[in-house]
Image 1 (tube, helix red, strand yellow):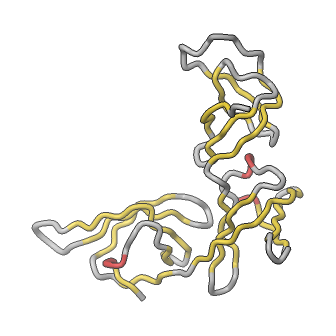
Image 2: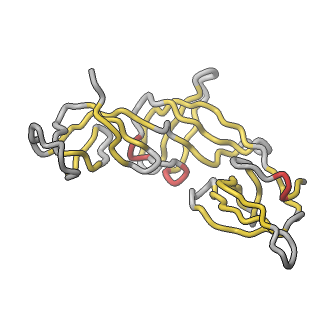
Image 3: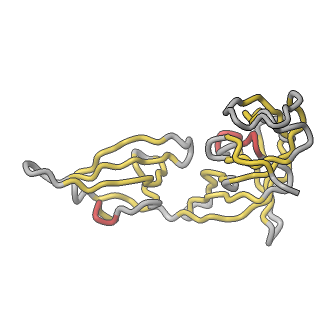
Length: 188
């Protein structure tokens, strides 16, 4: 058991029977009344971020979370299969536990979070940036870099990303998996 004095960003706690991580927190001591802690909590199962206020000194349960690297093998319907690189153990995860499944590419290394108590997988995090090949987009225009106009492009995983007008089919682009946006064109 811990108290609100132990809060820090990234701490995993149990709240309403679900695993949450603290995204941000702020201790508040008003002139009148008791102190409290304002937080933003991210549900590790759903990815949803909620605001919550704790009274100062409230007891909370801290969860032990283990991060392990797994390699993505393939998807079969709603199940995604991963392999641990050291002991070659394979596990399957449902689509809703994966942060951005549309950017998963075979062979990609991901981090899977497990509850240490019962070895239950609770989330799969992709790398922050992935490099994918554009398989289809409308022909680009040379020199059109002055405007911020964007066009849709399909990448090798089947995801559709908005890219600048100068990107062409066959080019490799870097994508931010947290927000699903184009970052830059990868130079050879």
